[in-house]
Length: 110
Image (cartoon, rainbow, N blue to C red; front, side):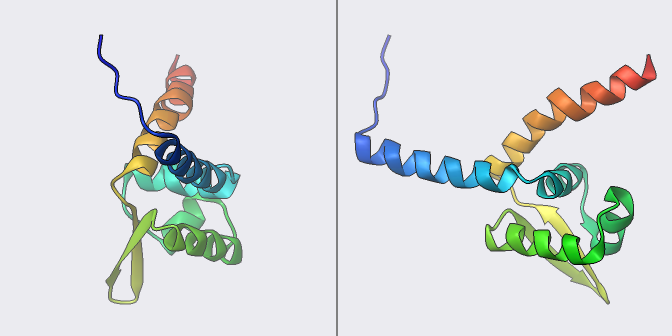
């Protein structure tokens, strides 16, 4: 059985990036936003209504997510639409969604 081993420097750099992602995901409002955006693109007003997060808090958390390059924007007239960027964050959110949100939805149906 062959295994690829990374050198210590590469492992440390990877650990730092992973910790950075986990710190961003560890905030409840950001996690809610990312979970919602993993399902569909949404504008700020839709996120505010759906997630019941006040506009100032929502804007603050979207700024953090934009700076971390986890979400992207698309302008359509006066509306700014947000979506989750492809990559590690989307993969982690998908797993969290399957284990916590989808299971919760299934439990309510029974």
